[in-house]
Length: 118
Image (spheres, rainbow, N blue to C red):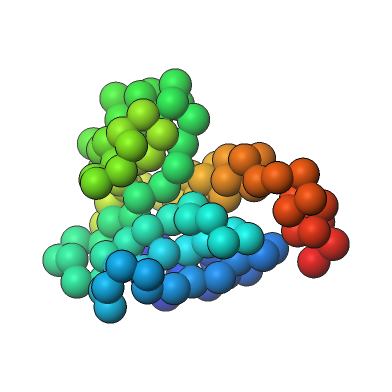
């Protein structure tokens, strides 16, 4: 999965948007304003920080060398995943979905209800 496919997949989800709140090279993908994925456009290697269940985060890091603790993120809740072609697209989509779903679960009830109406 390359950057363009990643962006299209993320933006196809309900209530998503993208922006550059920190600088001109750090792309954030959000759901109802909350970040669920971050990537640097200036990196030599395409990688993405994704939110993850803490227990599953550890399991993924142990199983795949492309999954590391979140760079500049809370390492309990975030993984940085290298998108270099080693991991199958279906796994990458599952990790993106998990991140999106975790953020949606953390939204206020009114925000979740508004999201469902989109």
